[in-house]
View 1: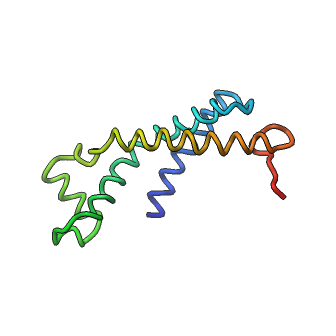
View 2: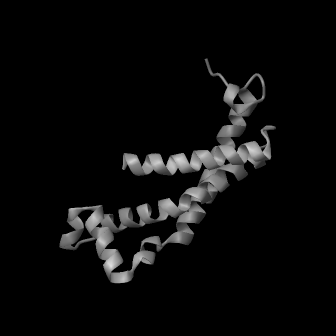
Length: 126
């Protein structure tokens, strides 16, 4: 779980920070939210199979499901093909784009507004 979450957040933060720089850091909520949404979209190709396997493991009753995520992934690929790992693409992407956009839009906006220089990286709560 830690490796997967680290990879997803690395892709997200790299994309979000790069997009933020392209949009300019003038403290606009819309720009911060758009950068978060684009970051959420960028990490979706990795997140969808992880989420799909996690949900399937939670609801699976079969014997081979108790062995873990790798046997489950092998079973899905052998029965339905590699593309089946990306079932649930649309709901996951919608969740991540909206969720990341709103969360990081709000967070970065507040950080920019509370910083003495108006830049989100300069905020201090001490």
